[in-house]
Structure formats: structure tokens, C-alpha cells
Image: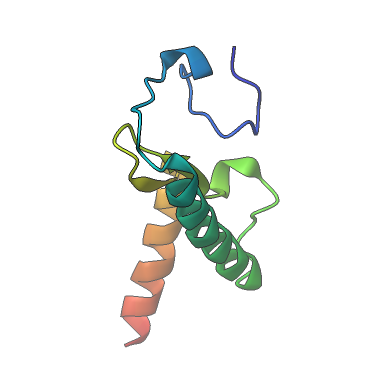
Length: 90
């Protein structure tokens, strides 16, 4: 069962994962965590409602150990709106 804010997506659990021996998941997760934190800090500086968990970037590690950052649909829609507004100012 997923717990809100536990870093897993809907329908995923620790039991759904297959770990590959020799893959450095920890380093990849740290990279993803750094980038997700940077994204969340910038969005917060812009005052874009990141107190709502739906708008936060979440770090993940892919099945082959690749670092991933996950955004919800609402977060991507917010980013699109910001980029459109920026493009209109140029």
C-alpha cells in the first residue's frame, strides 16, 4: 500500500521493484533528489503553490538505475503555463 509522500507512484510498492545486482541505485537516487530539490526550490521562489504535494517534483530511480524525477500532471500543466507566460514576455 502506498503512503502519501513515501516517494512511490500510484500502484507502485517496494514489492513491485526488481533490484539488479551491481547497479548503484543510491547514487542515482541522490542525483534525482538533488535535481528535484532544486526544481522545488525554484518553483517555491516563484510562489507557485508548492505547499500542495501535487506540484512537487519527486526523486526516483529507474529499473536500470537511472536517476528520474517525476512530476504529476498538475505540475507539468503549471510548468507549461509558466513557460507560455515567459514566452509571451520575450
